[in-house]
Length: 228
Image (cartoon, rainbow, N blue to C red; front, side):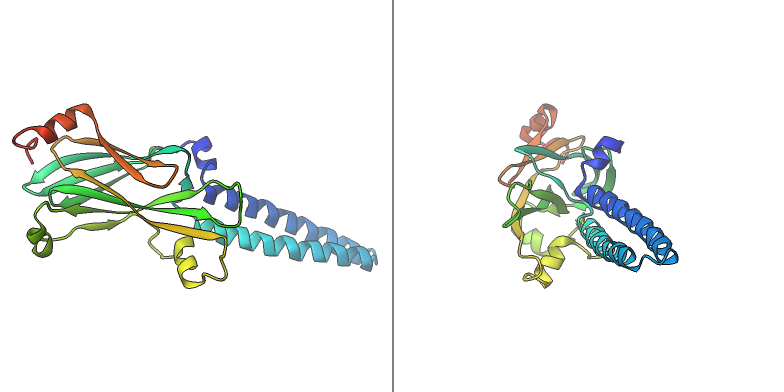
């Protein structure tokens, strides 16, 4: 991930601002000490108040940045992830996810299709701020509903592992975060084929759109399903 892509992440922006405020807070502490040594108690009091305000803001921004790990800005139509699939055995697949910033992750899925779900956060009160999104999970899907009930399921979480997430905080403390409007139910799936390559994007309304490339689309439409 290059510096420009890193600075486009909401978590990075908030954590950088938190670090800047924390540094400013330390400078105010040094100034406070000098004012006290000089006997200027009134000036020292103002620096102390400014130090407390900066510290509180720094903590709030730090917590917000940590809770927004994995979220990205949502434009009119935003590329979300590229998916490459390779067959391991019948209904067993090795899948590679590649994010727009170059980050990759490899998972194994069971089934006939892959399915990806995303979380989109919109704002109720913060007018003008763009929505945020993150991928929530990827799982394998069977075409046969009966097999779906009895066959091995593979579900891989793509969110934060520690559970400290803005969406989780909104669920637990909705009154403390009245500006957050969580949009659920954004998902997409396509058939898995050997050598398949797929692109996922999010519309400005928060709907996931999945597209196979031309070669993958031909394999999906072939009688053998591209060695499924």
